[in-house]
Image: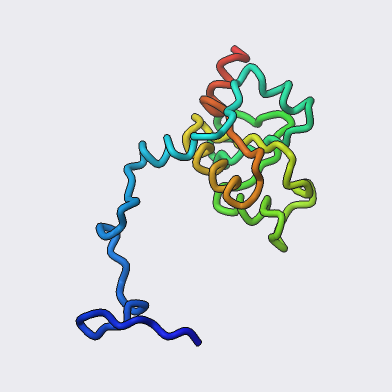
Length: 146
């Protein structure tokens, strides 16, 4: 078992509570969103059907109440946001069978295109390097249909 270093006050460093203010990487949500979008090749709503036709896996992460209110996204796979990483991680025993190719393009869709950016960034960290999201989310896609 690895031993912990002892601080000047005699407390093992591995036993100290982490203080968020000690972290030099603390960000605001706007900064985190900007950081998450760096490197994403985000998809425009007008290009979503073309993405699907090209074989992209489109994942709708909207909660059931939003889907009931606004309708489904045809051709999308619904995966609740709280289990997204487990369903798509190539190494997860809980991965969906359709998520069998880590090189496949994945387009995450939320309601307005914010949480989907964070989710796509997380998927990229899991090795799904072509994960991205839909600019403006479902609402942008739906506005094109009016």
